[in-house]
Image (cartoon, rainbow, N blue to C red):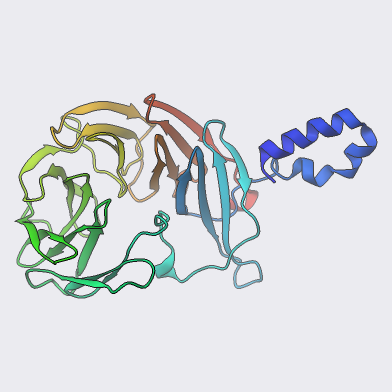
Length: 319
């Protein structure tokens, strides 16, 4: 039962008398007693309306009950509730940090090509990289919002980004990274533009920039006060997108066509990258922290450019 439901039930109990109150103690306390059990990294994060949902891995040492504990947070108030019984723990490679959108095509990434498989069993389309892919670092792939275009990022003699039309595998754009000394590059669509991140493999991003599909640089992400962003930018309106710092200290609203920074919202102190997850639905953006900051959550009302921070209760086993 959610806290909101529990609160309504408590009021009803007070009205009908002490005998009824004694009959309902578990229901009254169910929402209030919810606490985060598990960790350290939030998984399957999603936002639906103004409710954020996520799961935590609970390692019970092989005992019964091991699996994912899932929770919901009312973003305006920070009220936490448990989402049913623990669910079985999926394999390590099937524990996405952000929950995939329902009905999105499935990507099967191979050594030098990607299969784009629409939902419903339709035939998959194969898109192959234009050059030889470094087998040690492999290939990354992202679809645009419509599922009609795909961007591939990989290392050959140097880092490379390629954009294709899915239906025909026609090449729409191809360009090299801007930092020859770096071996890892990742690109994703932000509307009709790309967000490109170049980094030391396994390390922090060194260059993050906005570009056209053919590689013409538009701006550094964050402008004069540059940032590296977590994986999931969010469209605010038109060409303005919200980018959450991978250090969890800011959200930047930036026009991806002109490169102009519209607003920068402070979220708190910066921490090590890798512990921040951002997800959104419409104008509600949730920034969920993990690792040492597990239990911290920021709600960004994108329509009003307002930040509300919450500290979610942690069970004794996670402290």
